[in-house]
Length: 203
Image 1 (tube, rainbow, N blue to C red):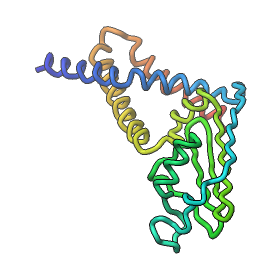
Image 2: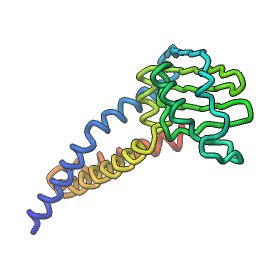
Image 3: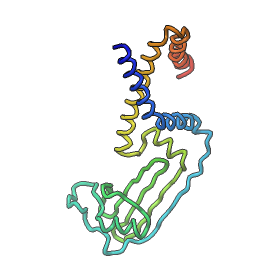
Image 4: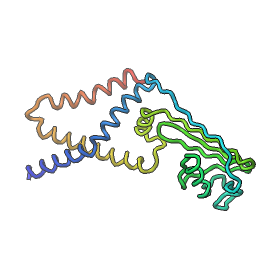
């Protein structure tokens, strides 16, 4: 029974460590880059598109026919034109802010930002995208900033796997602590050092 319990414990530990490996490396490295964000110089790259939307593609009313709401999706024909002709991809589910004379879309993204506006009277289109580079991109992944639903759930699953990894590791430490006298002092040190730093230096 003891061997079966220990075997199951080891199996849960190595499986959770395998699942967590790449994610822990990513979150550890981006923890360092976030901690030194003010020392990492980034020069944003700004892309601007100024053009005129063809008259036939200009929407004259919100496509879902609910003018009392100030947000609605763009017509599929306009989205296709933006993608193929201007290189501006906007998801079909993305909602725009509508007013009597303008459509405005905020397009936040990991590692940057973007926005688009269309003058409904003249058809003038202005699009601006800011790219702050790969470090900012991975930093935003770390924070879950503007990363969407799939990444939101990935962080939750990854966090559960990390908890399993830590708890099974703790149980394995307890199992072998008798032959390693320094085990519990080291565990205590891992708790006491952050606690002292928080109490004395974090304000």
